[in-house]
Length: 415
Image 1 (tube, helix red, strand yellow):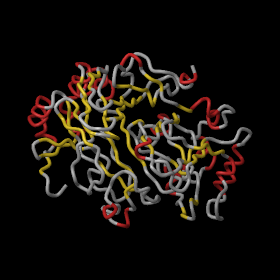
Image 2 (spheres, rainbow, N blue to C red; image 1 turned 60 degrees about the vertical axis):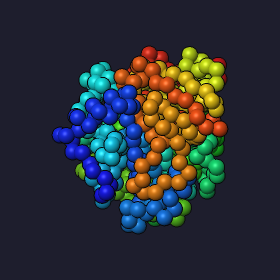
Image 3 (tube, rainbow, N blue to C red; image 1 turned 180 degrees about the vertical axis):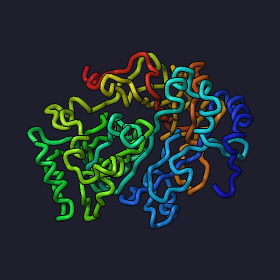
């Protein structure tokens, strides 16, 4: 960001208005890269191999790209803007977070802005060579104990970003029915005695390109090595329950980082943060597995719009996502009831007046033409998208809470 002029929050108003007016309600976003010190990059998110450790080797490799994010990454030693998306206009950059604060009603709609005072969701690609430690994200009530927000999340495995499986194309989820809290307690008590055996209490599911999962808060999961598109609530809380992954030690601090300090050694409290019934669900896959569902109302000749993330979390519509495919030479006008973050996964074309181009390779700090924020005013008016290339144009877009009057429920793909 050193060679780009960054507009400060108190000066965003004028450039934001010009950008929205010229872009007809669309904002160009630049790539947002996030490293994780305890994981190995999967090398499929188009970042140049020489830039995988652009934040410094001590920070770990870059294995995530965040989309339309106003949520900070909860990393130790983070740079000031880590996890935050920048808008780009006329050679200047400004934070999407500042844009929403300046003109929330125009960007995300009056109802959402009034209720949350921010864009409360984000999505990312996470891309790892191997599995992630078995972990959970706190519920809203548990996260509130440390001044944070809970984090339900979802997965979709885009075929375009999964040319290879990498090392472990399976995800452990939940706990084997019949597992007791004492079983988990023993795993935590053995944290410093070698591999703690938490995976012995779980079962792995093979990951399939073009499918996904809905993961409520408090549910253990150890994501596998497919590159994953992950719409989720705008929080970065977690607790790691697995102490050794592929020979790498996970410190106790990553288990308790989002728990009250006086509870960091309280095993009963730590286990109590799990949603026990959801973890030992005898029909776990039936309750959480997703396959795409064609939305016939927003599909037509030469283009198909599919639900890829849907369902409710504890009865609430917190986020959702769709995949739009447009055939060569075709165009369409997509009208949504609310704003969304768009990332292009294949092909080239245009969205409104903005060019779309899927990059082959991205240098750290380089701008691209694959990411766009679709404002509430643009979404509700309708956005024209055209495929100007020779292959299908494919884009993923995710939505915030309560945008749709109705979304499919988990399991509806079987109907």
